[in-house]
Amino acid sequence: MIDESRPVTTNQHGNHDDLVKVVMRHLRAPFQKPIQAHNREAFNQAQQLLADWDGPLILDSCCGVGESTAWLARENPDALVIGVDKSAHRLARHAHYQAAEAGHRYLLVRADLMDFWRLAVAAHWQPKQHYILYPNPWPKSAHFSRRWHGSPVWPYVIGLGGELVMRSNWVMYLTEVASSLALVNCAATLSPLLHQHQPITPFERKYQRSRQQLWELRAQLPEDGRYFSAIEAE
Ligand SMILES: C[S@@+](CC[C@H](N)C(=O)[O-])C[C@H]1O[C@@H](n2cnc3c(N)ncnc32)[C@H](O)[C@@H]1O
Image (cartoon, rainbow, N blue to C red; front, side):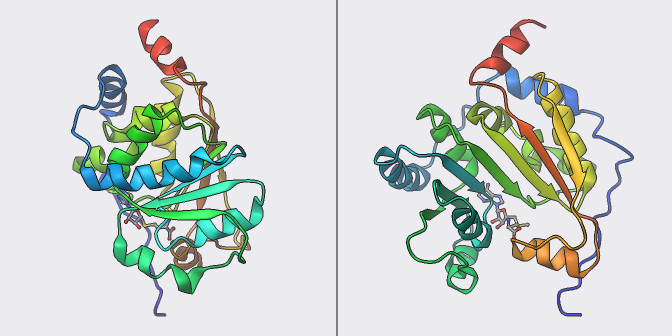
């Protein structure tokens, strides 16, 4: 089969041993890496659109070809949906995956989320929902810092607030996310997606065709700033 995809394999036996240490370190210290000009430009474009908008905002981070972005726009006609991905190649293929009809509001932005999320927090964005579907798993233990929850930008994902919705074909990625959220007193639910679930992204479709179990995490993120006080209370 053309789309055959192998399940994720890892040298970890459970959540990463350094999870608590790494996440807490990042929560304590702001991420200082300078913002790149092209990401700021891309963000400003989205910000302009948002300035004229007073309805709900849905973020679709790591949107790839933007199929889920168009789907979310169709499912949420009252919302503005912003899809972000750093891959120009993937975004350029969007036309093939465009499910929403004209009139639905969504925007695809090419930017690195390491910068985009920080800019969004600084601009006080408050998404109602934040989707991160099938992030790269980086399953080798040594690559923990490349997973979103192991990266210094993770506190900014938490800081954006709203309902976080993440999906993965590697359940350990999501159990780690749930554990990292527990550190800021945020409860997450983890559930298997049904086999007959209608795929909304190319990766989801590919994993489903390979009969892999898919998982979804949902969490209502703390109100802005709550995670800082959780840390101060340590
Ligand atoms: C496994 S693909 C999933 C894409 C899509 N959500 C899907 O399910 O088909 C992961 C995506 O994350 C994007 N990505 C990874 N790191 C990123 C970053 N730092 N900033 C923006 N996008 C990133 C990649 O370009 C890629 O499109």
